[in-house]
Image (tube, rainbow, N blue to C red; front, side, top):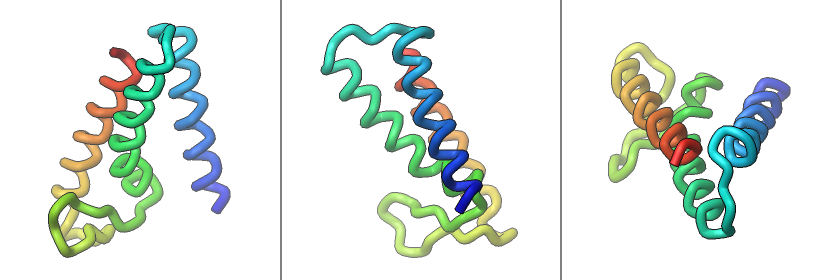
Length: 90
């Protein structure tokens, strides 16, 4: 529970820091669109970091942290990182 709290706090602080200082967002629409994209990316990043089950879009089995799902989890993790970073940069 403490690890989850730490990760979520870091994710929120990083989003706000990047939105205010790295690439300043001026209007409400840019904050709204970037937060939606950021949350979509974090849906795969946070479970990977916490070693929890990940959901895959349009697929029935959840990707549990077993060895047979290692590459699928890693692929979704990198997709989530790319989506989240693009949401904070643009």
